[in-house]
Length: 238
Image (cartoon, rainbow, N blue to C red; front, side, top):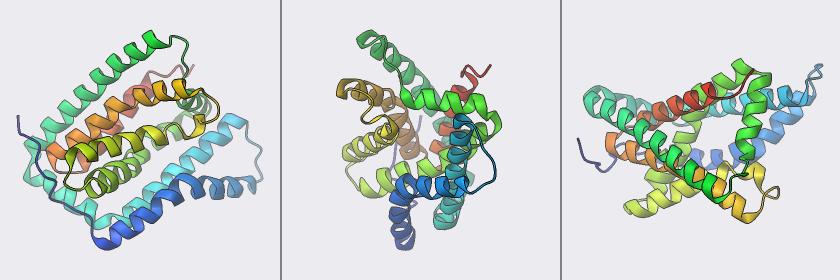
């Protein structure tokens, strides 16, 4: 098995600048802007459907922005796959195993500590998927992995983490967990929030590890997409 190496493909200065501007816009401003735009539509959607449409719109817009802002970075990462396909394939398989097994083990631990714990983010996704299956499938499997990997692994893990791998892992895992808790802040106790955050640690660690191992951002993108597809398939959509 090939060892992890220093990631050779870096973002250009313009990509870093626009990328860091994208983060607060995508996480905080874009949902509000799109929400106001959707209110202007002559359609009265149920709450869950409206949330699903807004969620999809945010993912799709973020995806388009990432393709524009990080186009050179993404193209260079495609070229890495063509040169090191076997390493890419190994990293995807191992990343999926790491992510799945780690999630199961942490889920078991969290259930022991607080059996009645409810992940509000997952509950919201389930409700939206039950209302708008196709939109949520496209958003969570096709668009979200590209956006989140460019931010959490491309910007934070590789660039902000610098040469300190331990710091890079901790920072990217913390940010990845925290962003999934935004809608739960103020609705759960600090202990419950910490336990829910713990549920995202295996995925955050696996995605960062397979990025470092494969040297291409498309490895965590593919692992993230497959993991989301797995989770989506397990949702009670009937």
